[in-house]
Length: 68
Image (cartoon, rainbow, N blue to C red):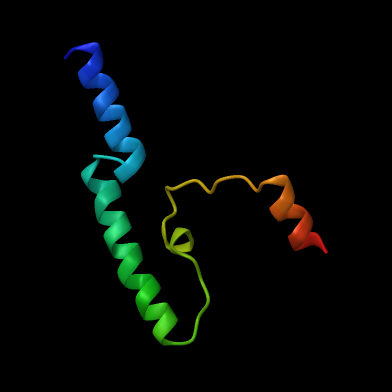
């Protein structure tokens, strides 16, 4: 694999997520769980149903708005 191919794959993974089959299955299952949860009136986020994904940190502006 050339350097340019590796960069292209890196951009693809950044955009669409992991190529790992288990992680893809987890994402699909989480989407179904989220839709079912919201039909029942829940207000969860997709990442709440994906235990292997990491949440992004809060920006300073968002944190200040949430703490008010």
